[in-house]
Image (tube, rainbow, N blue to C red; front, side, top):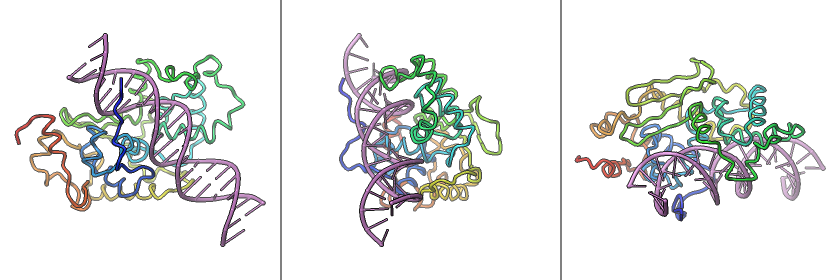
Length: 278
DNA sequence: AAGTGCCACAACCGCCCGGAT
DNA sequence: CATCCGGGCGGTTGTGGCACT
């Protein structure tokens, strides 16, 4: 089987994301969801690979991301889970609300691995931690993956426009019931859940990148524009979007996901998808 | 002040899986 | 059943900031 490249390598940006790119991606995803990561950059006006967009969103831009240094409890959890699960970072991250697998992985490699190097993991001892040796054994079973999915605190699932877009942050049994930090709303068609934790990052004493700042600013700006920004259902269905675009667009012209000043609606794509008569 | 090394983290790469056709 | 495709995952690399000399 010959795999097609995930993106056309020519003309696509790589490297650090700019605030402008973040703004476009965030605006687009929060507005339309991510019905197709590969197609999304085109409609969002981003010269990026779809996988890059997905990674950026999942690891940085989406709601509920907890930034800053790790608490003692979090580190203990990571060590304990790594001991039993091995390098299954997504599964480990699923038990740490607000943390991404990438972040957990980085923290392990940069800090915890050295600190706990003298303690051979149980997973390694009983052969579970052979993930790095045999790629075929890296992944869990289907059952394990399903459980991981169900327990993923910040699992993001976004379906195609029809059925309606879903952006969910599923509720994990492990997730503390801290209603003051999390808000969620569920409708027939959409699920949007988020945490606006601008005040909860009490231990972010590490490097505060410019993107940290501008992400917060973005959230605040969008919140201000739409009093119920994160909890507002994205699009209940495609007709909703088409019926009166101007009435549902919460952005000013210069804030909408666009390219060179031209608003970019994925109409053509949706049209192809559904074969609708407009 | 300049050079160097280290560290933390963001991002990319390649592989794999599951669903669709 | 074979193939294609999108998405997810883990390993690895690149990069910027900081401390030290």
